[in-house]
Image (cartoon, rainbow, N blue to C red; front, side, top):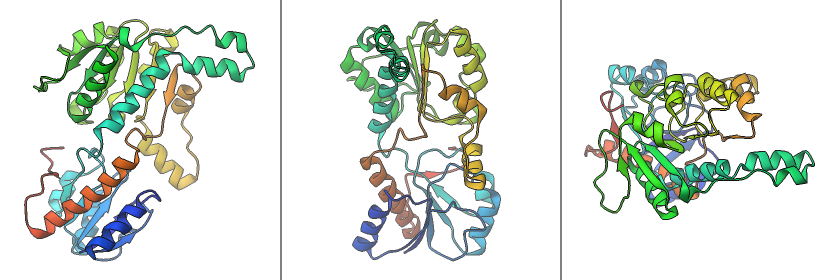
Length: 331
């Protein structure tokens, strides 16, 4: 098959090359985003990874070129216009679980960083205040109550890690897991907010979850609680989070998926700079840790993302069911 691969990074290229060598498939790769302007040749399918929108014009261009399949190399689909995909007869798949452990471990990393006030310690050291750096007393994860919102593959991976640390785990999910090896207490959303020392988000960015953590939710959280978002960008009401931090109510925040990242990445691509006052305000705080949507980013995850995306295209072309196909109803 002939595949056009968009948004290809240097770390993905070896796995794409290896696939082509093993299968004999033709892979045309580019680091460019997929758009109507960059899509200029026919193919059997497209493999893509980007956080900027897949606009209706993309699907219209795919139809004109006879390309019927778009295989995302990531999980999130909130940037896909499924109405347009259906209209132009394009089938879409994703990679639902490239490495749940990678994201769960990153959430843990943020928790430990904030519990031990590492940002404040580093700020003091950079200010040449060695004595002051030793005054920031930490908290222990094993003595904490952690609220896990969303108990899919990633949420379950995190619960297993937290069980190993001896933390008390509360979990909220309309469809809780039945794995008997997981030690947690299922609770309501409100109960989780009220009793958790740390709240970690692992739910999809569907409209129903937009600003799941807003001013009202933040007001229900314990004073000094920590908030971790390695889920989706739209789960947090960022101005409300900043206001809570300014009041000293939130103890700290870890954000890997930032609310304005799509528009900021477009600005970076178009103007050459990432300029966002909210981002800068967060970045300046010692009790906030930001990362550029890299919680998933491990060698294992990258390999799985590439290989599963191309496997999905094989299934589409062979006319066999693709378990990772996403429809407007699923998104």
